[in-house]
Image (cartoon, rainbow, N blue to C red):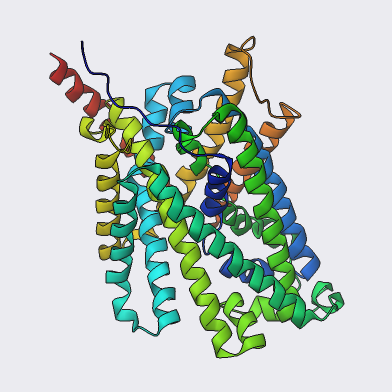
Length: 442
């Protein structure tokens, strides 16, 4: 009798899954990005409209991911959908860009941000930021080596803490507003804004809503996935949209539109205005919790993509193994963590992330596009969940996000060109890897 390779265990319930969605989306963006959006708008009303539009567009994408996850509840997310719908090459190019560059790059960037905010909160000099960031990555990888339940415990704790920080921020803004939002929502005559600038302000909004796909990367470990995935994605993302709109209302109420547009750190400025220096320290601790929680999800999700690629022979075969006792992709976790540490110490992560942004969003476009393939080729298959208003919602998401990609490429052609070059370099790597795998099989 031959031993069957270990597989993932379905240990995540609806609460765990919803916390992954919330934790994967809410990082540091909502504490910083609203100022960028305000600088490209002419009134507080426009700010709130942009965050509402971004939320609705993201919810459209989330509903599409809910059907994809319910149809293929396996580890690997977009990689799996692309592999089945369009073949190994597109799937490899996505994995090449995301699992080898974007995931570890985002972990390095956010871990560094976590370390800086933690140092600010506890009064450590910033020269300790790099070792603290490395320590955070080592700790998160170490916890996840023991399996998804251990990782979920850390994740749930820090997601609750980041929601508490946002709640405190909202309360502070409402107190400062004292029921008067007229000035905050009125038009700022000193800041005339063109329609192009208004449309461009949607870019940072959508980027702040990104990260909802991590649950699909972990779908192989979700209990009753056909029911749990749609519920968790809908509940989690709906909660994020409410939090984001309320947070922006708080910024506008406490700082006003002009004050928000002039701020470099709106969350700290808002808290300091009400509570003094101690308020800024408290929100720094809250942002540290938020960024730490994001790193935990990115490491767990990225490792599952690497593991799936390894099992397909598209990465080192050892990375495709799942530990029989913990049911964790331990080698993939160690590989991702080690590479994230290298990027952290090198300081090159910000440039890499800029280079792979277009690739990440192209992955979302083609990932959602696989839904049309599934609907065509599995038309008679029972589907426990179907995205409403099909094909309108997926079309709106695909067209809008593609428009965002084009606008981003026009705005930063160098970064977009490097992103496309990185994707193109994956083509010879793919064929070279297939050739080596063929040689091993002989």
